[in-house]
Length: 173
Image 1 (cartoon, one colour):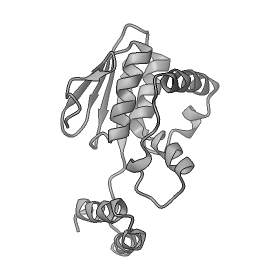
Image 2: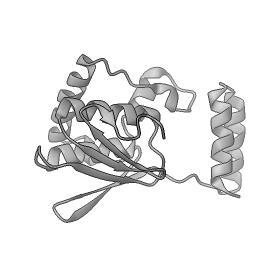
Image 3: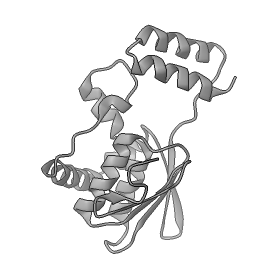
């Protein structure tokens, strides 16, 4: 009854494009009341801990401040060639929805919060309860480059120190 086993099997089916297999595994999980762990990230700003859950943070994401910074950031990132890697979204939905979902990963929400609520010279420090996905890793590298901010992300495997468009893990994690 380990949720990780079901998630791995579901991901194998999804990566192979076998959506009926994904559906079968998810139905099995639902029947057995097995839930996968939600992606969560934490950032401390002004001695207060802020928690973000993947797909959540709607009040924050709908704020004018967030939208302004997000739009400026995405414009700068597109100029340097960033395109979301939607292969990390293991659901049978169209590319537009996949791109939207990947933008809601918890570490991105925490990073945006840090960009908005901390001064430019201060590193952004985030802790995540799961491993960072390949697209968020690429996204963090580019954010560190276009914003000239240091981002330190602790995931389940290691510390990632993003600075000037590179990561201390040298893209091996």
